Image (cartoon, rainbow, N blue to C red; front, side, top):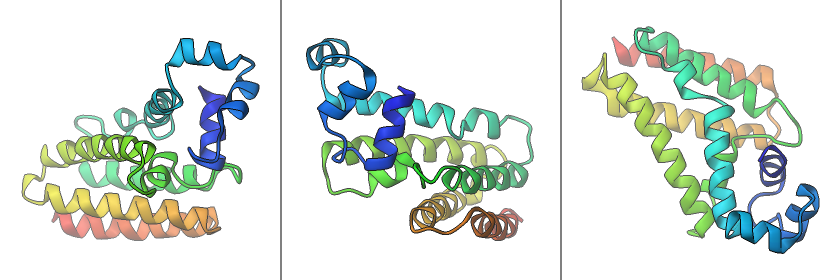
Length: 174
């Protein structure tokens, strides 16, 4: 899964053909289909893995943690992650979701929506009156951080943006 994640992140769903996947995984196309059914099903598993491992919301949005602190941490982790590796800039999920209404884009949007729901539930636990707007703000900033990383903005600048956004979140939470 890590190998496929790297490939999809670098080239996108459409940019990774079955031959490249099976070659990198060291399996035959028939073995791939037996194990994963289709490239789309496999991609969905890769998205799930990415969401669980790259910026694990369970680690950041822990019960009892101050809301503003947790959200600031989330944004800074995103900035650092999105700029960490020149071969994998941005967020795999958010960048895949930008595509047309292809199957892969719809899968990525479902993953992104699930993560937004987690953020919203966390914020609603302490600030239900602003949970929607804070969640929308977080989603928008993370999308912007991802796009900016893909466009070449460096880690230091992305971190400054994430910290500025954290100050805005503090204002929204007051």
